[in-house]
Length: 332
Image (cartoon, rainbow, N blue to C red; front, side):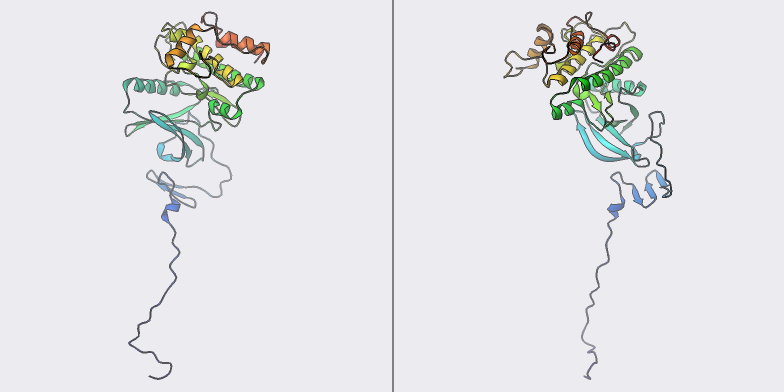
């Protein structure tokens, strides 16, 4: 073989660098929307988002009636319960955040009725002191409720981090909750029936709003009374535990216990042996009915705050003040 010539029987192997792989998944949101630059495509169609728009789209309001589940990207789960979950979701076009409550309907009849009640109340309530509902959907055996997102979480979570809440902060919280109760009681004729720290939500602006109306009762008239037995036992009024009739003032008892817990950092009704806790829920219920009403320690709190708590937790609802009457207290 001449120098420099190739042997035709020798097979050469060429090795080329692999092409740069770009995963298709990087263009997909969690809900399956394909996004590349200003192009958005999903099962509802195509949308082009202008790159030259300097003004963000206006936020969606509850009256717009323009939300759909397909327009929401799930961010994370922010709450779980026995009948469903609450997710933090983001709207694809406006980047607005919402709380999406998803409730499976394969549950017992009483729970279904509570959810139906919640849907009715949510759809009719528009108040700055009540968590707003945007829209509700039923799909594939589940109810989905799109709610206002309160980014500060619940006051139950807040209390865990701060241990106690000062009187000036309590006054600001209480004023907002009372305005929410005024709206529910006097405009909507609704007894909440489950007012507790976890059902009071806060956002980064310091706004406190009432939520979770799954056990609320709608009163047919301003003089109506209810006699059903639902809600959380800890904050339940004596007349409800006794099985008697009750009205809007049962929510005021709950408010007094909630505020006292915020102020002291502890639930205000003590078990017979404090270090051992409650033996069972019936022992707690008996204590609420039979023990003297709790009070704010006068050596730790102002006379105005002590008087306010006393006005909320009178055992006889006739002696308990209404939300309207409590609004004039000096503590607020």
